[in-house]
Length: 231
Image 1: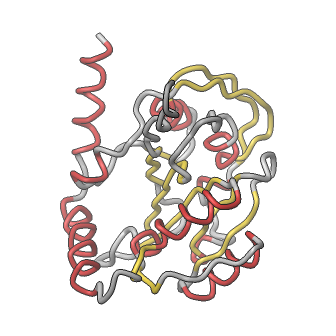
Image 2: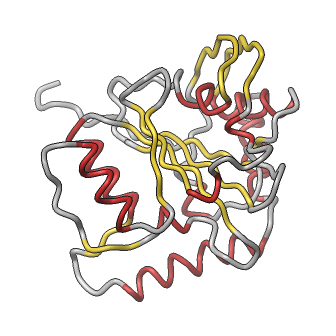
């Protein structure tokens, strides 16, 4: 039954905007063509390096217009910055290199930092800023988004996705989310098991420009941490 459900889930993910899939693929192709040296890296690469150095985790919230790429910040390429000895200085330096990149610390877990497109700041009806009166949910991360959606919040785990991204989506991690007056952002972030996690990016949310648009959330699969010799 579980395998059948996963097949259905994957099928739902493949139902989306074909133009958006093309935009994502076009951006990746352009990234490869524009890569002029081994020092050219994506924002995702830099966040992974920062996270590994200082022990932090990140989420990413992006917005896009019709005809534009959906993963502009995540796929943005830059020359690999030299990291210093302070996570906040490094994040500030990165935000100066990436247009419209802002960040803020999670309200509950200071080891989680939310990377947010400036275009989402103070946007009326933005789903991840919405408050949840009360929640007591147990299940997978994938089902968490569905649970929030069925309770009237403008989030979805469906929508456009390319074949590479499909292989990196977490369908199976179990969580127990409970609390009152949590923001949607907190509900998505603060209950993910972090111990032993190798992937520093917890999830990505993409929202089309405009008031009241749906935010499409993808949780990032974290491969098992490598076993130590002799284990």
